[in-house]
Length: 312
View: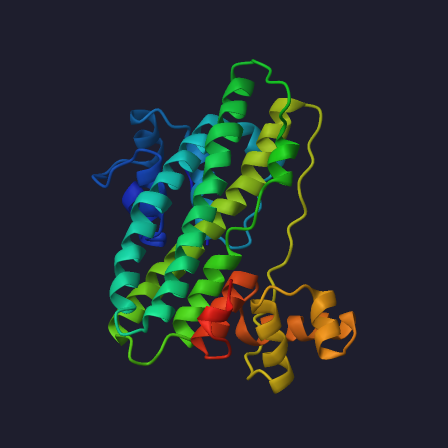
């Protein structure tokens, strides 16, 4: 379909993709659209129309890649506004909604099962808070200073890239645990409700991260040095892995991973090479869809492969 324009009515914009309601809300445009165009609404709330259009295109077109000309036209301050409001939205709305559903969903579980799932969820919450905290305390003030021409020593956008952690892996692991490992006695309605929240958050965070990596970073590079532009190569999404049952050996390796053993220790314990351990771990991740050690530990407990009391 055609790209968006400033002359497009807000109501028509949202009709193309309902998820844009959240984007509009985070940049200060309320839902009382009337017959306003994108440009008219932006003028009313002090927002650059080109910047809003770019944000909407990221959310609406999976293959979208901003050009250098678009980055030059857009306002980095408005990108910061979107990022700041998104942080608040994720932490105070999305995760809070998920909390209540998790609490109800886990009621039929044993105390041990409830504890490991809650600990995993709380760990993800803290990881997200730390991730956004770094951006709020370091990145956003740095960019704001760049906008007004004030230099801040000891920081650059390179440091942001170096510290830009992946916030999707643990959420993906949590989703797989809810879908595949919680006992059947859990309320199916609540399970589906929670999964819907997770899928929505996952999709929104994917766009959020793309905006940071492919919009904010190159825009800041232009501010740091207008003569230089270096765009990070986009990594293709991993293909969806086939889900299979774990072999007995893979279950043994999984238990060792959950017990906190390193690859060398696992190899010595099972009398196999380190390369074989690495292969088993790749297969475990491929089959379970879970990538992190905390996620694999919860998976092992929920599937009765290991006793919670054996985990330090």
